[in-house]
Image (cartoon, rainbow, N blue to C red; front, side):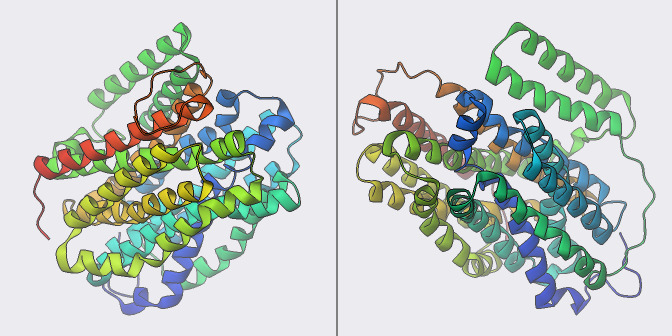
Length: 455
């Protein structure tokens, strides 16, 4: 993609206002995945839903969001960033408007899907800004973006809690509608880019979406029909990938060892943190009977700290590379989830402390993996590569929410995985959190011995 009237290394993109605009819109998009977490108990009560059913308020958004990030990443190889931002933010605001007026659960899910179609444009485009326009400050910019994601994931619940607790959960949608006012700024501040020749395998894109969605249905229903659909779609996707000259997902990308391993590590890190963010509000309501505002306040300290360490993270990446940053991040989320597992059902301040530790690791994994991935791809591969990166990250959240929403329906559990945990109603949560710890430690081991990165 070429800029018209300026060079790719233009200082235009070193402007603070462009960085602030990019991070602000990224915050709005990511907050939408977590603002509704604290409202899940109230939405469930409003529509008389089971935990598995209400999980689709989050899962429907994150599934489409995850698939959409890959599509927008691919589109960014051919169309200008500012044009894609315009389209995405328009859908985002429209979905929010419909959600505010939704009379039933089905309309609410449609609204969340429309929101996701729009919001999905933001992460891949945001991560392409430093890759395409600001090579010299790439590490620092990745640090800002990663901290924005971590901060927004945590601040979302408190924003949702305050609005939902004082007004009603419907009013949470109004926050997203504000993003429409940024469209003129993107049109003004981002330069023109010439359209590139190429084609997109939309059939392959649809099959990717159907495969991911059918997998989530398989997790939540565990029925023969869901197994049949998933098997059919994955076979069709495999056939389509092999039979077309320009498949939507080029299998050759996964032959780049460093890239593939980093994708896996990023997926696992997000699986832990986003799963935790989904589970904590449900646990705090069920075990501690906290309000939406109180739940948001428990999540708030970790979100603030995660948002503040972005500049430091970016500087460390620029000096030492992303490998050490990822390792520290995995250690922090492993220790944090172990801490939460050990004190689930105990003093609420101990839960808040464990969340703070876990949140510290989130931006480190996000920024470190993003920087490492960009180093292993050519400029022609960056659009799809970052799209896949965001697909894996946000699908991890959808997968985690669907899986643990289903697990929570089975309350008859006596096996205690953590010897320090309490028994009773808190045991199922403690077991899930200790599984997060094990996944985190195994991920760090795999990352340490699997590949070696250069700065």
